Image 1 (tube, rainbow over the protein chains, first blue to last red):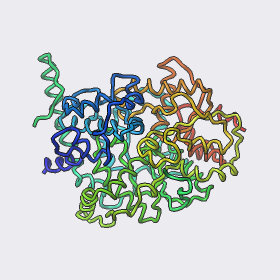
Image 2 (cartoon, each protein chain N blue to C red):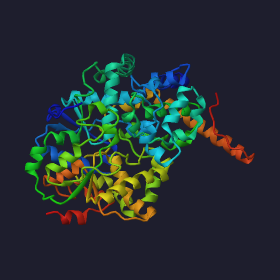
Image 3 (cartoon, chains in turn green, red):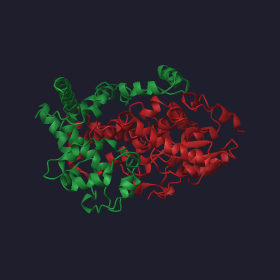
Image 4 (cartoon, chains in turn brown, yellow):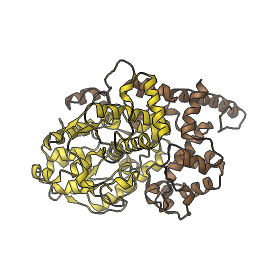
Length: 225
Length: 312
């Protein structure tokens, strides 16, 4: 049952196809008319890209590897440098969208148990969302903000309800409708089952890495299948 | 391209946003304050959930789940007779538009989501094809203000002359659904036009005007150094432009600039002499809102006291 549910989600995000280009074109994450076939490697994406300006990330190169059906691209940590700002999407003269292509690559990567450390801080996000109806920043992310910001910000966060009340705003949590619509919807789409699977993999990865560290060789891939 | 004549002033669901609710609640109270004074017919629902955009662009939420959650919110908007979904956040705007487009155009997705609703007994959530339009039913608050610039100018109570203002148009408003932007997506002017209507001295162009804020969703956490370098680059170009006020249309951008400006000053050994606010806070202030009790400026990291005291 769990595998069935996760397959359903994966089927929409990562449809079963022979090539990376086909996966990109058929994924629900990308635009219907995405022009990946029409990419002429002009580099307008890279020229406009904030990540390319400050790091080795190169969207033109990532798209080239996808067009060459080079599956090793999903193991390349560079794909985690995209800002999802969509400047490439706006600028591409052939209606391609490297930003959307990278979203699909990251999903492929996650489904292979690679790069789970990039998203594991969010594993509890779904539960909080189902409970509150509101997204909240994950604790690790908040911890970083707490380290970055002054005491005044932390005091504000502690007094958020009082601040909202002074602004004559209602509670953050959405009104309870008696049948937990959001939780049921997310259960039925397979969202929670997928998170459970990813959590399981991440735990296995940590154990494997611990063993590997002891043997002097750290692993990256986790997918046990 | 969307046209200014298309902007509605009634049937507006003011779509609540996680980062507004949690970080800058004054953006919501400012929006309602301004809407009240501009005779905008709007509704705020206590049933509406977040759009999931934060989770989606952190690569955790999938498109099907995000679309199903959006369909539930669309049903709430329609049920209450407020089908013009208007956001204070650019990511909410983009996420909702894409979800609506999928529900209208992708039969498999629509059928799948409706079958989930039916099976769960949520018949009132079932989405009927084309019951909302991905262009005509989705707006950002700045578009609503753009449709009311004459009125805003007439009601403005503050002398903003000489106040140097720069706009940061949020990427997820004008770069994702670029065909639906009012004006040229290569050089959007929405914030500039609203600010000008109040007599500010708007900086027409500055280097890095179209550069992203640097938040990049997970980037701020997993690639913090790069994230701050991007923000620093833009802050430097604004410093060169000699601005007093930077106007935003997305709470995530506002976090990146307002909350991180003091961090960047410390880490990059620099100093900036300008403040930040959301376009809703700016319009509310212009229309006479209390800076603390309505605009909520007390929640900002870069203090606005000196800036506000300098206004007449």
